[in-house]
Amino acid sequence: MILFLGISIPLSFSTVPFSYSQITQNHVIRSTVTDQKTSESLPVVNVYLSETTIGTTTNSERAFQLSTDFTRGFKLVVRLVDYQSKTVQIFLEWAGNEEPMEIEFCLERS
Image 1 (spheres, one colour):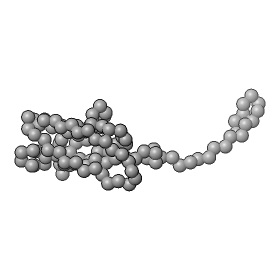
Image 2: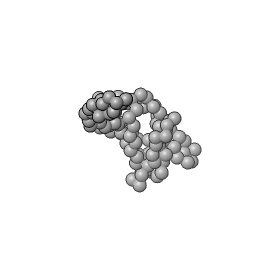
Image 3: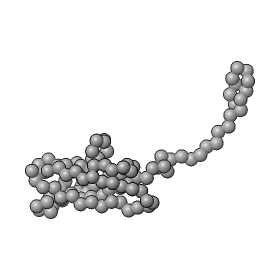
């Protein structure tokens, strides 16, 4: 109850559980990055969504997983020193409980 200018106003709030994840769905992109010539997996490759701060690097198994709630198209950039960068345009559409998108990248030495 709030007292405003001598008048009491009863207030009632109902709480509804709310979670950001309930209104957005994350798309998951998984990948490995290899050398185009030798087919060896590459360590510590930078992977990020162009024009954002969303990114990651390949892990000890030389793979990465990146999550985004973007529903519009975006550019995924894969970059490693001494290799030519690769940029791929990706369009994701959420249609329910989908499996992660799997992509394989092969980088060529500069």
